[in-house]
Image 1 (spheres, rainbow, N blue to C red):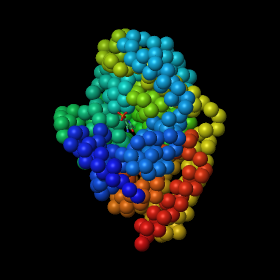
Image 2 (tube, helix red, strand yellow; image 1 turned 180 degrees about the vertical axis):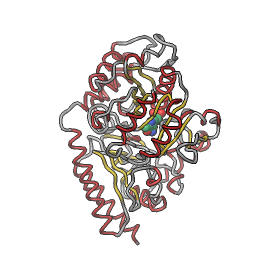
Image 3 (cartoon, protein in one colour; image 1 turned 90 degrees about the vertical axis):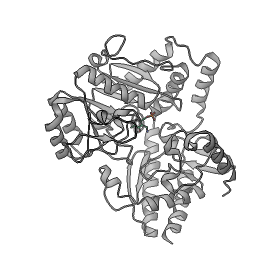
Image 4 (cartoon, helix red, strand yellow; image 1 turned 120 degrees about the vertical axis):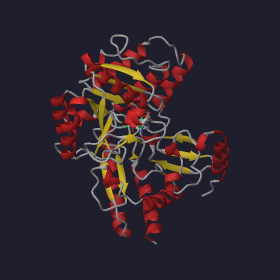
Length: 430
Ligand code: PMP
């Protein structure tokens, strides 16, 4: 595969853009280095790079592109925004329509506010929880990513009873000391941490279905316990649904799980590919936010007509009957096919899948928490990633990231992908 132009553009990018990329996860450092593929065009389930190579895409832009690239209905909405003004700085009818659509999909949510990214959404839910409870401490789960604000770039201490340490230079230790990070799916660690910190907690921040160390579902009974003890201690529950909302079915993960959080943070899918975030929750909590209440949050770009129209169009596409069932069917085909090929070539592999999202872990360990996800063999993944690219399949360059199916993927794409996996596993096994 000729990648000359990708390499040239990346070299030039490195002279002008820090690290050559605008988000660290786009670089190929985690997969042994080299120039990341520079894409030129995307349509449906496919990418074409600057050298003219074609790929089946499972990156889905890290989640948002659930309709497939350049979906005509979303393209039409964005064109409308481009010709009627992309940014007003005034209220618009689109914001109201979109807020109503989100509330209809997620009935537990009384009020919503639009922001510009998942980072902003999560950051603000924490502020709101602190304002509402008058407390400062935050509990979260190891390996979950909640954006790049100071409060959530915090690593675990040495155990459930220990406060956190900064996970990035520039995050003050004093801020990390406000955060307790414990293992996911570990009732005992949660009980211990709640016993110690529960009375000081403003909130428990949780990805209800984890998307950031692979797809990991909560074990039976874990989320109900999280809710029960948080309620007992007066801490709010925030669901970070930046990945999960509208991913597995039309609406929030809470419908699948039968639990109701106090606040929800959104991003990714709800923008139809344009920048967006949102947060919402119960009326009495949301009314803590300015201009009604004392918790400040604002944004020049928030609720802009382009993101609103694109988001509305995306949800309209997702209302079509049968599409989640089809992503689940194709996801199942991929999972079953990849496992069969792993057996054929003697590759050790565990797959976690929910609907059209799946993660390959190169380990025989069952993955229910971050420590187990870390068992996946990064070197094998790095080789697999590059082999798949050579074979025309674009994955995220991270051993933890999910493959995201879209409604544009067809059975023939799955067949081609499995042929690529067959060739890649064969090369790995040699
Ligand atoms: N929360 C979760 C669960 C995420 O996966 C991400 C992004 N990967 C974020 C928050 C941050 O969203 P953004 O990149 O839009 O700031």
